[in-house]
Length: 499
Image (tube, rainbow, N blue to C red):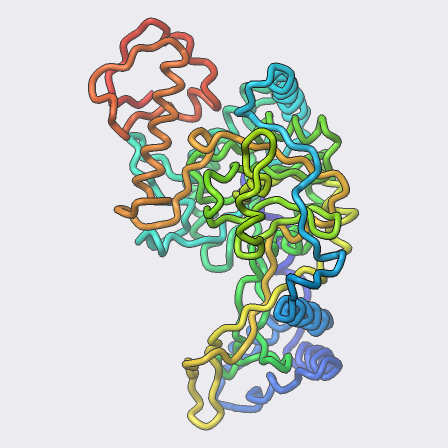
């Protein structure tokens, strides 16, 4: 089933049915009320096609003009606070301490914890079978760094089957429906695209009949770039300089395009959100979802424990008594090296963009606080030059882009849970070009292959042939997490293989 009704409704409202003079009057009034009417300066130019002028007004109509100043004010205040931060004089609300909430680990050897996580898995599968769990994918990225011209999710890491990242995730979701007894469409798959890759992504899924699952698409939002004084910047005579609002833009995008409303109507209670660039991600992971449910968590974070103090990754911590992600550069060397009684780093819960939320938390707590989560990014913003009537690319930072991060909502949580998982089983990032030593298609393929070999060995198979091959594959429709492979017990499997 192809779902995109929210987006179509959004496009068909407002300006399309409004004549140009009426729309111009409405936009002019709004811009004057927020002191931004300078962006209409070129609409009197008769050499500009009327269609371009109309498109320009329609794009302005989509901007939260009345909120832009408050977004910038909050972001600038945060920037100033960070600039003046004194580690020897820290206010109580800025004190960073280890996360003191609920933490469990799939790598634990503790019998009670392992039993609890097995029960959590059952609870997760039960919730999936009831249609209470949705998967939410952040897929706005392009494959540029990989040398691929297209959405990153359409990238093939080089396994024998040729499966793309999108296909791997979709087929895992389909397999979960089978395992839970809820059917192929038990887990709705919501995909946030970007304006740049929305069409290519939706066409790709349509071509493959959505891989037999229930998929809904919606695009990430953008915000206009502004001068340091808060004035919107024209990139051409009839277009604004805009930029994606960060991966934290997923929350306002879900509101704007009716995704949260759709989830309520469908009876969804729990959401598992994750990024597109992990070849081993487990969408709607029943163990993670079930664990968070069992802990009555309103928000959860699946993490990888840091392998060393100098690993450059943000970690889960507490600031001013509230859960948060602290960047590696914001904690001292002493803090980064501090260990607990178990020998693990205290500030070790590495963030990998893998989160759980209750729908009630998003609707009742996050949505009312959306305007307080933007950060300043000072950038070189191309601008329209009046004298030359052309777009100029500046050599120095001249403007501000506003962005937010998906974890900015963590401090709003009153009951956060953290699940630590095995790096080699759940994290195969695909960020860098082929041939790179880390986070590349090559390293992801090797990790993917190692998981496949481990699953077969755990099932009792004997691997022969080129056992070091990185082309060994157990497809998602054959197994979600190593289950269902008992038929290979006591059999020889010639490597490389594709099952």
